[in-house]
Amino acid sequence: MPMSASPIPFNRPVPAGREAEHLQACLASGRWCGDGPWTRKAQTMLEASQGFRKALLTPSCTAALEMAALLSGVGPGDEVILPSYTFVSTANAFALRGARLVFADSLATHPNLDAAAVEALVTPRTRVIVAMHYGGTACDMDALERLAERHGLLLVEDAAQCIGARHQGRPLGSIGAFGTFSFHETKNVACGEGGALVVNDPRFDLKAEIVREKGTNRAAFFRGEVDKYGWVDLGSSYLPSEFAAAVLVAQLEELDRINTRRIALWERYREALAPLARAGRIALPELPEGHGHNGHVFYVVTPDLATRTRLMAHLKADGISAVFHYQSLHKSPYFQDHHDGRPLPNSDRFSDCLLRLPLFASLTDEEVDRVVASVTAHLS
Ligand SMILES: *Cc1c(COP(=O)(O)O)cnc(C)c1O
Image 1 (cartoon, rainbow, N blue to C red):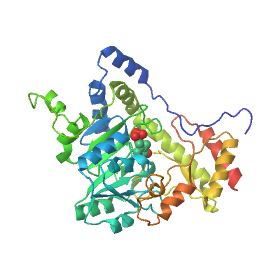
Image 2: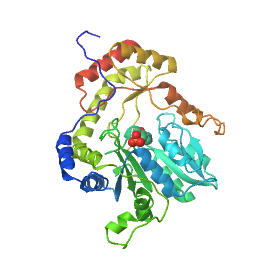
Image 3: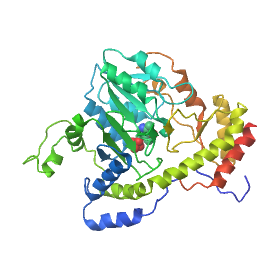
Image 4: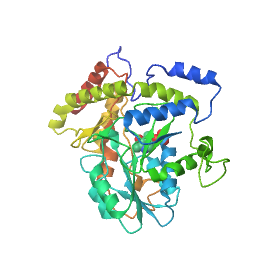
């Protein structure tokens, strides 16, 4: 690394414009708790820009997944099919309800769930399929929708990484009964910690509000639909503060610009690394037919773990922070003794060989070129 080159972090949350202005207005308004004007504004923006039926802000995607699990009504004796290559919260939300987790493998060519593998795991006890769209690239939703319909299963999309991404023109998160989003600082639009539950199946509209408001019908009360409110079902506290919502509004105002920039950086990586892929040194992300990803993650897949470890160290020495991602959940310290023993080799391979390169809205073309040069120097 030339002495003048500054380090390139893996991620940096980038203010989009009016965050400070909105926060000041929120502070001065005297309304700080959840479900105020900033929350409503963020929800309306999500619904209008993405075509969602109903979006409810939550404190995190983890919270939205817990809501989806509560709403699904699963409990002990029920089975939930989900990928092993995903974030802990996808699984933990359903484990909290006492459901049995049945992990499915990834595709050989992509970290996303293999729909054929899911089909083989359906039993009379299966209630829910959770699809996670890695990097904002859609799972085979046509196959998963058909499967869910044929067996009467609830389809949930962990769309944490997917804001603005599409599958054959349909927004990700709008296809299953529920879609869950994250606005954690590592995601395309961020408010520190934050999330949303998108409710696509109208049967859950009322119950989703109740679960989110500590099991009370407070939302209906404020609409004047009931004359007092009380405890009517199970729930918890799933409202973010107005501060988070105010920051999120500023980020959503610039969603298109953020995603356009991220996609341009993503394309720059892919083009510049194509020769290494052609030479068989690495594999690059594959995009399914009709994809409309949002430039959330750019990754390379090395031939083995040792190569990835050396490549990470080489990048680090050049001042570049590249990071691996999930470790197979079926082999996790918490779950390994509950797993049924089926090998999930594709999930394990992505655990060992996938490496994410720096990608955030204020990354420059020159910085991408520096990362590419470093990867190329090490692998050629
Ligand atoms: C980030 C992420 C989550 C968790 O989001 P939080 O908002 O941090 O709770 C869940 N699932 C996936 C796939 C994620 O990428």
